[in-house]
Length: 264
Length: 264
Image (cartoon, rainbow over all chains, first blue to last red; front, side, top):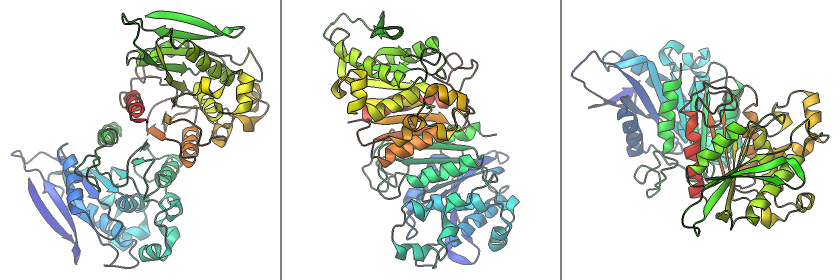
């Protein structure tokens, strides 16, 4: 494995970290995954992001995580991280030959607010104004599929629940309601969450699934009954609050990968 | 195994068929499952009901299916099958010693319109007027948990979609909207469905899950992206339309049984 850290544009605080398999056969190519971690838009849990990246690396992916901008670095924050995700996809595609990546097989997996970034990106990847803002083209940034773990979707579903936090995110709340902007151009979407999530209500995931289903987007949704927020791989090491070992919830990873194999 | 057929009350067309393990140790007791099959309220697919019963028998259950009344036998039909399900639970509890059943561990698994019957029953098991109608008491008919496969929930979610069929079901459509009658007394509920179901829209399952979650009921929901209606065990033999082998969807059974082990 070679670990690379690639700054995005001129902003050195923002980077894509990559974990690249180095096979003897340099003609082999692999799918790629970009992990978009959570962190409430206030920080980036890099170790957890790496753990999630390794879960796909172990399944044969070239794996990345995005260290995006957060509140404190830029306010109001959005849509900056969404633009950074677009630029990440373009960067990976641009380097796909050197990094032995299948350019048509880029998956994004976002968690908590990283799920918010990913859901907004899926709504916007084909949008002309968005691409102009990002300095990209739809062909450069189109993902094959997205995975959303316990995502934030819309302030209307209960997170954030205070005006000060929302104001630090955006001065246009309607623009960040991801369930309101879904179209048939969204790529296939896999969502998982726990019904008992005490921080980001399950209504976020339900609202987004209803929107993607209504738009005719390939949608899979798994709502596990128990478990706190931020479970990551739902084992005792990688969850946000260590000690949470939930093998039932941990099925999400195999379910997501089976789902990926069934996509056209 | 001993197979028994037990008529309910005086109506000989309605019966509970049971598949009872006969261990040498007659002090052993087992959980029980009642399968409530689909059939559009026009017929009962008994072979499929037996297949589903055997899936739990193989996991250590005393297994039953209910041959309930359907349109053609009684019109408007509802709530008759819901009452018959209540009487089935009371009958099983009454015979729990003879049948070596754990009286506090009765599970109901309803599919399609059988999911409608089961969801309505879960809303009503504790209701005084309903118990008076059924000639039962809440203590006799309380289930431990219910499982709903591709359920019909409410006419508002697109099934049935014609007035004549709806009129054959009820003269009071509001009374059969299962998502409108959920309370905190509902027992834990596991729901699975495919997003692509072309007959009973996934909006049925989503509406019911939102209602049970809002009421604080233990809820688990799995929406698989692909697959037609009536999948049963999602293998090529038991599905409504033979030839449908969907191992991804077939995970619902293990997920449901894991969920059962996690209930209080």
